[in-house]
Image (tube, rainbow, N blue to C red; front, side, top):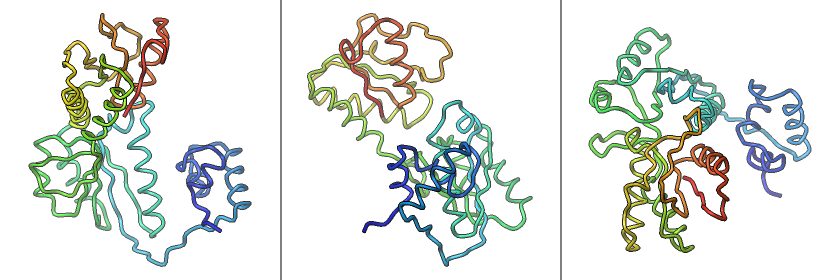
Length: 271
């Protein structure tokens, strides 16, 4: 009999693993009804919580730009935080959430490190890190890992996605299905990850002999738009690659608002 995990409970109920974790650990953010349902399902499936004998009592920091974490509908960095926090709790440690603004990362961290007792054992830094902060991080005398960002100029510890190859693969998927007019949705001036996704998209086009059209770049993070302003090219592509699922959802609504059929008139895929 296979081991019952958070993932298997989530699949049984068709909910996220984060929701299962919250329910089983009595965390806020879900309804009492769902919490009871998760616990009952876990009991029926024979779930046994993983009890670690490795207790550390250490303290860590999860540093993130306030705009990243508090963006309405944001799920990526929030999910990472929840699972890091769960792992820290498993080893009897704590994860402290720290917000910073733009290039104030290192100064904000140093203030926290100087004032926090007991001492911090390590820092997780989530998201894009500016050049000034990357340089200053050399002075940070504490272990740190940067999540969802990479710079070839600084030999730090990174955990990041292969944005370039994944975007190439997604674009090739559309090309293999006959598309030759493919647009890209995402503001390539905001983060290096979106830029890498765009360059992977361009390479797929070039490798297949498809001309690059500047008007097919919708350089806008449309998931943050509050209105349905017309940002689409006059000559509508037959397919769009969006830089994230939230952008794809907003594009879907925009196309439907203009009575454009999906996927009849336009196909939409996302990173």
